Each structure stands twice: as C-alpha cells, then as structure tokens.
Length: 385
Image (cartoon, rainbow, N blue to C red; front, side, top):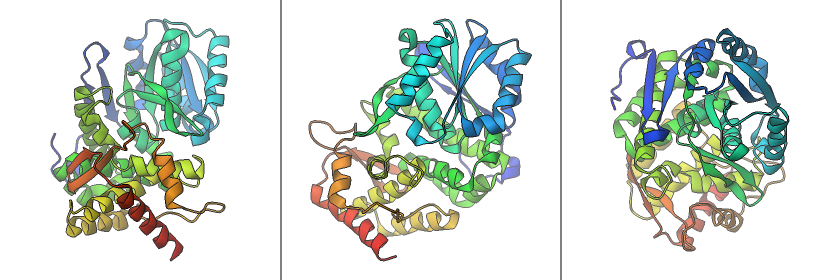
C-alpha cells in the first residue's frame, strides 16, 4: 500500500479495493459522485431487479431521491424503509420492526437490501439481511466517513443491547460497497471528526507511513478535499481488507482493528448510546486510553504519546471525557461495562496496546489496577476542567 505524502491534487480520483474472501469476495469502490451511477454498479450484483433500500431520516432528506433515480435508470424496482437516525435505532425494537416491514413488502430470498446510511444503518441492515429468510444479499452505500473506512467493510453486523454494544450480530459479507466521498459534504463537522478517529486508528495500529501522511494531510481530509478523502478512505479500507482476509471471523489478528474500542465501547454504554458521545468520539478517547495504558506499562515512549496528542489537537479530535448532564464518570462502572465486551476470553479482557506509532499488539496480560488507574486519570482530568 502506497501511503507517501503526495499533495492532494496529485492523488487518484477513483479507487477500488478488493476484499479477498473466496466465494464471499467483493469490491469496495471509492470515489466522488458515485451515487449518481449507483444503479449501474449495483445491477450486475442483483439476481432480481428489485431491492429494499434501508436508510434513515437524515440521509433520506439529503440523498434518497438521487439513489432512487439512479436505480430507476437501470430499471431496478425498489421499496424504501426509512428509520430514525442515531445509535439508539440499532436495537432489538427497530430490528424487529424492520423485519416485519421487510416481510410485509415481500422482500424475497432472490432480492437484495441496500444499506444506505452510516454505521447504524449498515450494521442493522446487514444483520437483517443475514437473518431474513435465513439470509439474503445486501449492498453497502456508507454515507459517513466512519462507515466508509470501517463498519461497511469486513462483514460485521449487529445490534446493541442494554448489556453492551454489538452483542447480538453475525459475520455477513456484503456483495459490494460503494463509498462516495461526495456524500460526506453534508455531514456536520463533528461527524467527520468522529470518522477521522477511525482513519487515525489505521495509522496507529499498523502503518507508520500512513500516520505520517495524516499528520501532513489530515486537515485536508477533514476540510473536504475530494482527492485527500479518497486516498484516506482507500488506505484505511486496504488496511482493513488485508486484515480481514487473514482473519474473517476475528479469531486472531482482526482484533487489532479494535484499538481503542474496549475503552470506547464502555464509554458509549455508560451514556446509553446516545448523541452525547458518538462512536468515533468514544474510539478517539479510547485510543488515548490504550496509548496511556501502554505508556504506563513501559511499552511506548512519552515522545510518541506527545506526538499523537499533538495531532489530536491539530485537527480537533476529542481528547478527554465530555461533561454530560446526568453522567457521573466512575472507573469501577466503566470497568464493569468493559467486562461485558465481546473480547472477554476465559474471563480476561483482550487489550490492543501500542509499542510505537504503527506497532500495535494484543494482550490479556494487563492488571485491573492499571486499567482503573488510566480510567481514574481521565475522570480526574474531566473534573478539573
């Protein structure tokens, strides 16, 4: 993967990354204005020219008519299912309601769902596709930076419960992913930054050259330069595809992709998966917690930690726990959330820690005392603001 620091104007305007999984292989197409030709790209993957579009109210307002027109231009019939926007939609209630609506519309086994939204819609739709009539095809059209670089690729689908995030779900690969970076232009800056945290993750966990590129070009990505966004999405997707190809069902190296997530998911669980702390913000803070835990254990240098925090400050990533009405951060409570994590194995949490920027590893050899110390430090910093 080439991650040299080209100027944005010299970067490619179109890219395609293959996720090589044998019979379940598929392509991730990355570019600008892909939505206008979505029907053309989708048609070859359909067994029957009828799809169910699953989207949310926000995406529908900005982009639904464009997708529908593109499908109609290819004589593809569609049923549309619009859900509320937000993480709280990714639950059993909305899953059940969506399944009822899909069955009422007689979406059959030879038809296809199109997940048209961010990570919430992608995860929920993918899980619905994996279970509807024991499994039907689905296609991802991710509309947020976070979903384009992470959740739309790799086949993780699922819903949240009161016990934790994504505890009900399945590995189920899409037939195609269309990542149109032009769709990011309608995102609030907060959502772009939340997605950018996942982009930074790929540099921190295994690609020092890409991290260097981000230090130079990250602001272009956030500010909306098309070529820079295509490059960042391609590099992120390629990194994830390489790992997924080695470990589709997360029995080994795929766990690296959870850098910051063990901490981040606990933060999200504490606030109830609402808008007070979105997923990418939890991951951003969680990566710093993982980095500080690594430093506390003598694994990563203070110089590297300072460098990462400097980049956070440069681009505006969240670095500390937010003050949220009705939430009193407690280390012991967050640890309880962490112990509900999917990565608990034989009673032990699996942590992704760092030896250096671009050099992450997994371990269960972490003391509860060290974890509580890190949580207490972040909570103390919040109370002092």
